Length: 113
Length: 116
Image (tube, rainbow over all chains, first blue to last red; front, side, top):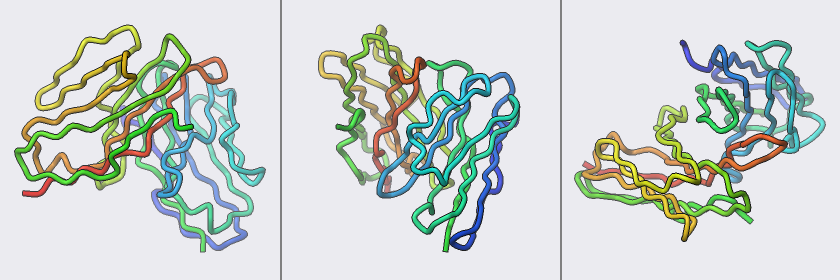
């Protein structure tokens, strides 16, 4: 398996623009997580899905953030409109079960100018 | 309050030294899971080990070893005879129930620098 695949690897956008991050989890994994990593706050869980259903989105910082998982092999994290404070590395991860290890993608480095 | 505390922000050692990375966690669950991940300079997070709360046996994998002590809520990680390639940020994580599932919360990480 190719592992968790995220795209794009890098994204630079202007404040106010819409940004969409994409993730393909490992086939057969039932859980998908979106994390954000910053120097100030470390690794924060934004949202997780179980069998394509969003379970806990309490980590999503604002209504500007939304996430979807239309099928078992694809998820998106959208920021609209983007702001400079959204600049971070966004990781997608998937796991077989809820108590097993999560496998991470390589991350998307987002810079909002 | 932080669920996972990695008090050491940065550790610097010389190659071949042994180094221990500390992890202290806090949970009210009786069943939970602990993990260590490595984040090398390339940026991806690499899974190293998973332990459940009922298994306090220490584990050794090559130069890596882990010491789990429920009495002190600690899950420490030791690298023996460190190498330059061990330079990375290491994260400890705790999975406890959240929204009905066990979901990992990460510590702030410890940056390990191994000098040649």
